[in-house]
Structures are given as C-alpha cells and as structure tokens.
Length: 602
Image 1 (cartoon, helix red, strand yellow):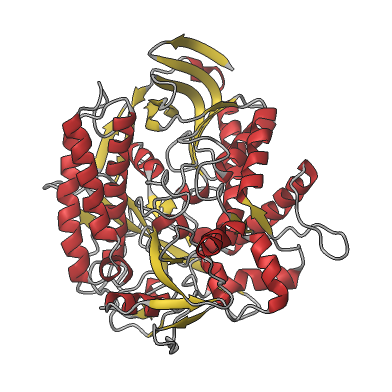
Image 2 (cartoon, rainbow, N blue to C red):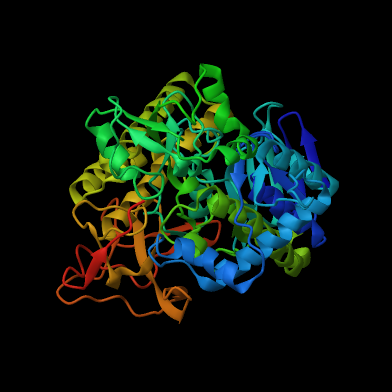
C-alpha cells in the first residue's frame, strides 16, 4: 500500500482496487481482488464486520449441491415468482460460486452446525460470526480497512473511474484513494425505515454510480416490505411461512401469508385493522433449530415474555426498499462491471434481477448474490487495474459529485437535510403509494420528488458528518425517482411490482427496464431472449440488446423525463459522458390488447 500523504486534514492512499462497503459483498470483493495480487483498500461507512444488514442477524444461503435435479428445482422456485426475468446462466454461475465460497468458509473456520452424521450444515450463516470472520480474512489478505469512512464521491478522468473521496467520521478529516478500479458494494436503500441493520443503507452507491454515468436496472422492483413485529426492528419474513395470521378477535385473516399474502396484511393495516401472527404451524421438532438459526429473531419476543410459537403478536410491514428488492446498478458483463470503465458493482448495490427477476431474493438469494458477485467484481476489478498498468499513477482525477463539496455543514443545512429525509419517506413508505401503485399516485409523488431533487442539487455539501447525512438524503431522493419513473412505465403487475390500474401480468412486457440520469431520467428496454425450457416448463431469459427503438402502433416510443426542457440526459464530468440509451420503453399502456394472465402476488 502506498501512502502518498497523511495530514491532520486527511489521508491520501494509492491502491489497485478500492472497495466501497464492508458488508459480505465488499469483504468478498476485497479478498478476491487481493487473491489476484492487487493492493486493496476497503472503505466502510460503519465498522467493517459489524455494520449493515447481515452483521446483526442470521441469514439463509442459496447453497445447493451440484446435482442437476436439485439445481433445477432451486432455479425454478423463484423464476415464475420473479416474473420470468431471471437469467439461467447467471443463476448457474451464482449457484456454483456460492457452493464453492460456502465450502471455503467451512475450511477457513466458520462454525457451521453439525448434523447427525457429523457433517457441516451449510445452509445458513450467523451474521455476527460470519462478518467477524470476514473482517479477519480481509486483514489477513493485506487489505487496508478504513472504518467509519463513508464515501462522498467517485473520482474519474477521461479513462474512467479511478478512486473515491470521503470523510472519516470518528477520526476526523477526509480521505482520498486513487485506484485503478472501484467496486461499489454499499448495499441497497431502505430509506432509514429502522429495519435492523439498515441505518447505513441509503442508496449512496446508486447516486455515485449514476453521477459517473452508470445505469440502473429493475428499480421498479424496489418496494419490498418485510413482516415484522410492531415492537421489533427484526425483519425475517422467511419464518412467517410457519405463521397463521389473525384478527384481534382470533379469527383467521384469509389469504395472509409471507410469500404471496403480504398484500392482504397491508390492505388490512391500511383500513386500520391490526393483524396478529403466531408461528403455530412450526413443527415442535424444528422449533429449537429455528431458534439456533436466527437467534436475533427471538430476542424481542423473549424480552416481552412472548412465545411466538403459541402466542399471537401484532405485526406490521416494514419497508426494506432495494435491500430485499432486486433493483440496483446495471451489470454489463460476467465480472460485474458497469458501462463505466473501472467501475464494478456487487451485492445489494447491484441489480439482482439476474437471479431473482422481479421478486425479492430474501435472505438466501441475496446472501448468495453478495458472496458470488463480490467475488466476481473483486476479480474483475483486479484484472482491470492490472491492464491499466502504470497509467493509474499519472491520472488527473476529478470529483463527480452532482453537488459541490466544500467547507462544513451549518445548522440550517442540517435542518433541511432532516426535512428532505422526511419528505422522501412520506412518498415511499405508505402502502397506498409504493406497494399498491397507480399512475395518478406515481405522478403525484414524482412531482414532489422532482422538486425536492432540484432543491437538493442547489446547495453545497460539507466534507463532514453533516455532508454525509446530506448526501444520504440526496441519494434517497434519487433512488425514489428512479423507482417511480420505472414503475410508471411498467404498465402491468409483475413480481413485487403491483399496479392497481394494471393488475395483470402482460406477456409482452417481459423485459428489463434500465434507467439512467440525474436531472433528466431516461428509461430504456433491455429485451430478453428465451432459453431452452426448464424441467418445469418455464424458460430462463438471457439479455438481448438491439439498436432499434421499441415501437408500438399509435404510441410514442420515447421515455424521457426531463426536469427542464432538455429531452435527453447528458452529463459530462471529468471527461466522462453518460448519454441517453437506445431502446426507450413504450409509454402508457402500450400493450393493453395483448394476452395477459394473473401475476403472482408476493
């Protein structure tokens, strides 16, 4: 590691690869890049090993033995739920890498429980033990960790992204890292909903990537709401597969459930009817195993003297946004690279449509995606930096933040930041805006969000903790706008995306929506080509991009949303240009006469 300068005002470092984010995806990226011989710096917004959604909780893992029947069943299980948008080749790659990485964890000392035969049971991970081990492995690999060091902006020149800069919230001052390549592993965006471990997940990576000219994909699949006790921040919806749901008088809530029945719960809550749950369908013999697998799930119940297997307790739906949704930074190749040279994405910061389509990956798929995409991105970034060679030391890098970064944050700016956070939450948290979407509701929210975005763009951002909070508010505003722009154009119900005014799945809209831009958001279609049918008769898609615009008789094919009179998103910063893409999505109900069928409801 080459330390260029260390001053009281900050620190400057040089590396081959910079990883932004210290959760599972970031730590796997750092380890994988180091294994390729790269010098690596990892900058975490919190403390690497204890911050983020995984560290305080347990998670299942999409760990499937390499047997054809088991693998096919695993892929089929989410393909239809996800609206047939997943990619067969990507699912295979992720299953392979997850299997290898989980086996590595066992060899590296992770304390997997043993079954009756004395073999390790590798289907889940305890967050505290997992992330403690990952931090240890990152340090052992020679990676320099910058804890409590959130990034404020990417650095770039005409060759692409070449580092990032941020602040040190505990030690004070700033940091700046020059690197051959950057991996964004900052997690998703839960809009500060108070879901466990999500306080650092505010969409920062989306904003930085978009400022560099990267695209996002699947942002309409961003309205994940998790079942949670009203008295707890723990969101482990998987356990509610064993639940029955009741009204206060003890009668059953018909249709309520963890996978397809959350909408029923939401509609009751909207009407002011409290819903209660009891895990009374869990067989007695597996209850001890459930407690061991997800210890934190049971702590709030124990604190209140509640036996969740027998007693009824009040539940709510807590927004987890893209943390359990599938939208994120658009991936352009198998190494998790983006369209911007030198920029890679992994984990919840990247789209998970490739393995989940439009339905939540839950813990297991997201955990598998984190460790596999982190590995792919780390390896890809290291190889890119190696190809860059000596050039990386002579680059004239400039910051890409969409608002000027300077000085410190005053009290009035801090107040406006808090107001902005509340304003975004008011648009994305209500079930009748985000879960049950309509054209009128989306347009109504977008009008306010567009105004808020312009306000966020006008003021300078301090290089301090107040600036971090300000950038969080800006990132949440941007994320909400990408979400609702794409949701506005998907005029059907598919996966977790529900349109009350288009309640059916439209076969002609089996494509991914790719968005880009800051002031002016543009959405294009990424069509999917069918692959050979699976054993269950479904077909996994692979990406097909063409240069021909999508045309629909009688309708305009453009889908650009200018914040001014500009009809095209174009931003040039430090030599990088992100230009509106081909294949704009059809506007309005482009295929109302096409055959349709009922969509699976999550």
